Image (cartoon, rainbow, N blue to C red; front, side, top):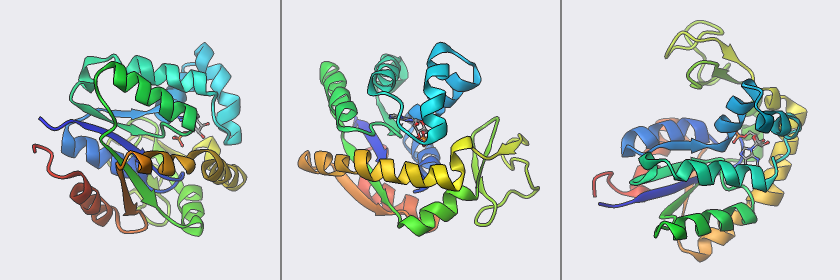
Length: 220
Ligand code: AMP
């Protein structure tokens, strides 16, 4: 059975959340989003959440040791045996090295890195208009993909909210942090020959079709 040990890479606003939902449904693998895990920790006011919040609100990265620990723990769960989709991790070279090491210990390796490419102006428009369901995390956009009823999730009826870090000033910092710390990962994974570059400015269905073409059939 083909293993799908996948990483979804791209700047904030590239559509990682939207595509992640489709990929995990299409390939039957778990979605590992460090952002979602950290936001849950903040909501539950755990010690890790309290430490992470100040970095997150400023649009800065949470220390590597914290997120690496989260991912190592998550990879011990049995549902990751046939593969996984990492979304928002790794974001720095030390995180990528830690992931390689953890997978090596399991006799595995990253099989594909999907990079979503979108230009900066569109990213800012997407992020500042983004709204997310508090209950099921489904993303909407006030202009591009509005819900049927304002403020209410089409999928589960939950309340839609704007993330604290989706304001314009924080968004600009997050994009700067992405360019400086995360973009070098594309080179890192190019060396392993596992990168698929995908145009993320297209309609979500078209982007997903390109991703599927790059990944190959789910049951190969
Ligand atoms: P995201 O939902 O992936 O955009 O993550 C939201 C915020 O969580 C980021 O701006 C960071 O502050 C923090 N975060 C999520 N994943 C990571 C990571 N791999 N490394 C460091 N910080 C992270």
